[in-house]
Length: 170
Ligand SMILES: Cc1cc2nc3c(=O)[nH]c(=O)nc-3n(C[C@H](O)[C@H](O)[C@H](O)COP(=O)(O)O)c2cc1C
Image (cartoon, helix red, strand yellow):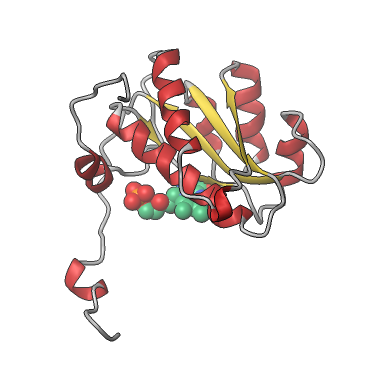
């Protein structure tokens, strides 16, 4: 049905995804990016409004300019692409846009690629980045998602399941 096989199932991709901030510089296939964005557009969305738009930035100068605009996203300059996730300013724009962003991160992992969420909404640079990519007035910048072939295997401490799972009551 998906027309794209990566050999990694959904649960494995969810459990092994980590933020990747270093990339090899190898190009990323256009088909992979299209499939990843396809996963973003199919995310759960309040009242099925689907308020999102996805701008895929590949040009080196624009990647560098976006990286410079951020505070904690300088590594965007080294990524093969940066997916800019935008939403119309609907009631649930943030929840919807975050769902799409997370789908994109997990789909990138399933394709053997590395990605990292760089904050957009709430950041002082959101307006600047929106203008740089020609986003329409009133749209919200949800996230910047650099994607590339991973050049690191970071480990992260995670709270154990027994700490966070509560049956019946907190
Ligand atoms: C809303 C949000 C904003 C984030 N912003 C940044 C950021 O600006 N720069 C960055 O390097 N990582 C950013 N991250 C990634 C987090 O630092 C990362 O997800 C967290 O440390 C857990 O690590 P993991 O993704 O490897 O599990 C952000 C993540 C989220 C969900």
